[in-house]
Image (cartoon, rainbow, N blue to C red; front, side, top):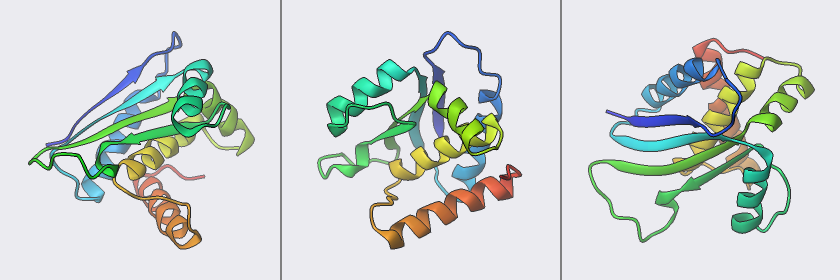
Length: 148
């Protein structure tokens, strides 16, 4: 059984988070991930910029940052996978939904799945890895019923 929590650190009510939880559950089932623990944290621009600056040496606001605990060889393998944390900037997600001309639900779902895939070891630094990761994101969202 997977155990994840979506934590809204902002003062804004985000009704879409109930649906995002269902999208993430769908993705976990589709990816055959069981016995995992992780968090999705909805935060503000100041917090995500601070995280981006401290951990990635990029002093800018970003949309999503994942802190994957399995990236490090020192993690202890157990029956339960403690995957890490995903931080999503609420304002950036709202702005990108407008920019990309799709719903806020699609954008915040996309960022959640994107972050989850990073926790699972997917990356998009190399072009071939990007194709795999982005195709998987789109497949999950499309099969769930969240289209562009």
